[in-house]
Length: 367
Ligand code: NAI
Ligand code: MG
Image (cartoon, rainbow, N blue to C red; front, side, top):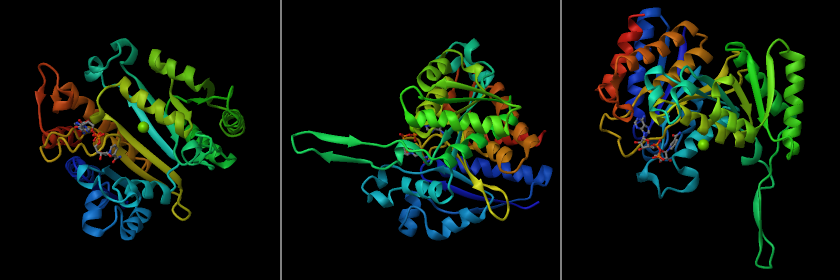
């Protein structure tokens, strides 16, 4: 098999964490003949400096032609004064838009070795493994009209509009059930049907798609506010949480904090299947940013980037055994008390970015 990866390390700690993923790509090519080929390109501030734009057309062409994009992070104080449409984040936004990445996957997993680092009690989060699926390209962040109108009497009116069309709800719902089928078979849809027309319609479409196409799986509904409470009180009752762009933004950040450090959190963004290959367009990235405060010092925790690559193995390449093995290698590394500074604990041994990558690579190779 030939599997094409585009690596976009970006700015700050992005290149440092991506270097650790490259070690794992090599391990998989050597141990299971994974057939990965990689290309690397600039994105964000480093692309702006070298190429005049936060992502070049040539890099966009590479992104559209590869099987999966691995993205580090972009941004930093150096580019604070850059024009709005050339700022580093614009590179990521263009990737999301042109690749039509409508489904954002944010897992919340509790590694046993880190259960005590959470602000919640061990019994609430130990063994936690849930997936928040956020609709990423519609809803109130993009709906029109979107404006601030001067009413002329000293008053203004600020307007955002929540808009969802049938096809947008259908495709994210199908993605949710397809994911649930590979997990524990349950989807919980969250909206506010009691006060929002878009919530009422979301509920109707999700219910219909479930009945017509996925009746063998379980569907539950929660109002998003009550769902947020349950997420904190007893998160293990959920499997896949399906929700819109706005609620998903909040619920995924809340879920992230159930399990602790920013340096541990992966994400995936999936698009529609490619017309010719049938493969979904996909981008895998850590939740954290470019961490300019620690960049270049070997202090970055590469596990969020590494876990994002594991998601790529699972969702883009159907390498389930290898994804499981890589996730197990991460858990074993933590169990062995190997820690970067951000997740350091009494009695553990502190390593730098490269040391953490080596520890995971060694355990993956041994599987
Ligand atoms: P950040 O996530 O970069 O950093 C927040 C804090 O967490 C910092 O103290 C940082 O040192 C720490 N941290 C983050 N990742 C870590 C890791 N892997 N290992 C150890 N410690 C880690 O968020 P911040 O500081 O708000 O933003 C910095 C820059 O990143 C800004 O320019 C921002 O716009 C950009 N950013 C980019 C994102 C992306 O590329 N997707 C997402 C979020 C922010
Ligand atoms: Mg957010």
